[in-house]
Length: 168
Image (cartoon, rainbow, N blue to C red):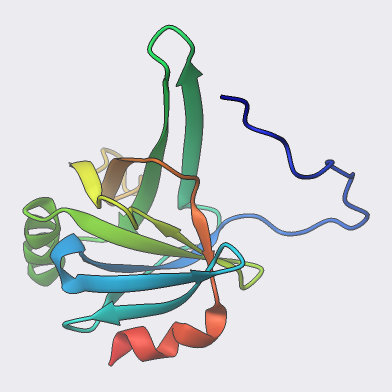
């Protein structure tokens, strides 16, 4: 069965900034529904508030990769978010333990104000965390949190007007 293409790609005329400004995170089980309008998430129904993770500038990132196989007759998207958290304290370490125990959904709020949802369909499928104490006095001390997942569609943009409501 053919899959017709719907548009051409045009070069963008203006530059933009990259990088993640902050993350919204919640257990996948907290999401009861999300709606798309014109391929943008316009509403999210949840049982409890999302939590936020502030991100140092030029530290956090996310990627998604689509791959298809004619031999298998299938395709999928893999995503990965890397969250860098500096410093060390007991509360952060306990929160990381709770994140590790869950399948999670993430919203990456970018430096330009755009927001993108990762894990909307199935949540995350793997979470890794590693702490680095540093060696020299000026070394980085903190945690790298890597959240991975798989989806049947690419990351979806989130209407920024719904973000504030996710925190209540």
